Structures are given as C-alpha cells and as structure tokens.
Figure 1 (cartoon, rainbow over the protein chains, first blue to last red):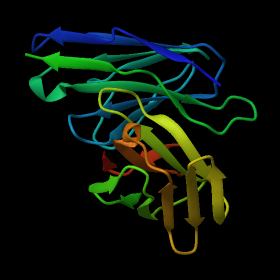
Figure 2 (cartoon, rainbow over the protein chains, first blue to last red):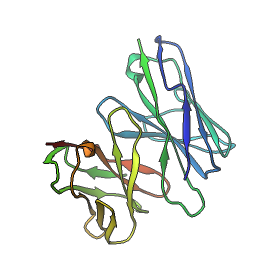
Figure 3 (tube, each protein chain N blue to C red):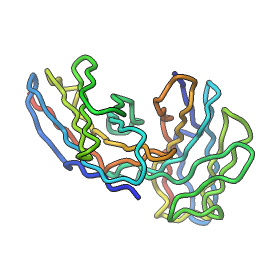
Length: 115
Length: 108
C-alpha cells in the first residue's frame, strides 16, 4: 500500500495570490494525479503529473492556472495561480501503479479558501 | 468521454442491506472502483471489479456487468458508521473518472 501526505492541510488566501500544494508518497509510484472536489461535489480530475515532463491536463484546466511539477517518482506539487473565490475547494493528490497493486490511493486533501 | 450515473441520496436502517447502483458509458474500460468518503475526509478504497461478476469483501460486495455498463455496491448489516458518500469510479485508459457520489444515511 501507499501513504500519501499533503501540505498544507488547509489555507486561507487572498484573491490574486498563488498557493503551492505539496504531495509526498511513501513508495515509488507510476502515476500521480491531482483532483479538485468542490463543496458537496464529487472529484474532478485536474491533471496527470508526469515525471520529468509537462503534466497532462483535462478539459477545462490549463497549465497557466494550475502549474504542476513532478521531479521524481514520489513527489509532486500543484500551484493554484491568481486565485479567485471560485478556486475555493479541496485539492487531492492521488497515486497508483505500485507493483502488483491496482488500487488508486488518495491523500488527505488540502482545503483552500479564497477570500 | 465518460458518463457515470448513480443516485444522489439513499436512506436505510441500521442492520439492513442496501444496494447502490451505478451505470456508466465510457470510451475505454480498465475497471470499476467503489470508494467510501466520510465528510471532510479523503476517499478510501472499497472494491475493484474488472471482470463480470460479484466480488465479496466482508460486509461489502460489488458486482459488475460490462455488457450492461452496470455495477452495484451491496452493503450488509448496516452500521451507523456506514453513513457516508459512496463514489463509483471508472478507469479508462489511464485515469479514474468519478460519478457524483451517493450520500447514504443510516438511521437507528
């Protein structure tokens, strides 16, 4: 199994600023993802974080707004740029691809409030 | 693309059995997952089906019919702690797409 940690766990930010969320996995995983979960909603995939190359973004999400890094097999960051109140959400890191393990694991999430 | 449907809410009584249905239409299928999510917490894995049939794990069972694009999660001997949102998710080529979730309320 894999254990995923995220920092910060929560933050309150002013509009127009940026926040970088860190995700650390305790095992080497093949794939890492970033999801958003708005209040009362399900999870929406933002992007797949690719090691050593640009992330693969889903429709409706762009690199300028959500730059992502993945320098190695166990670490990734998501930046929420030029924030507005509409970005208030929970951001979850996820990982899969442990040898012989089909499960997709989730971090505890980062609760972001933009004022 | 992916289209996943599940009921928004369900209620049941402690000790009872409840079945949560999920239908899906996908381009590419590499398995169907069920997750449980309590309010304010991350989703936790419940089950995975990639072949047709029933998978049983303790009080939880999950069924898949690929030809019908249909799955269900069966929860037996319901407990109060089972009150949570249950998320159906389909794995396409490499990514997981979630349904909107079913909020289950278990009452005494």
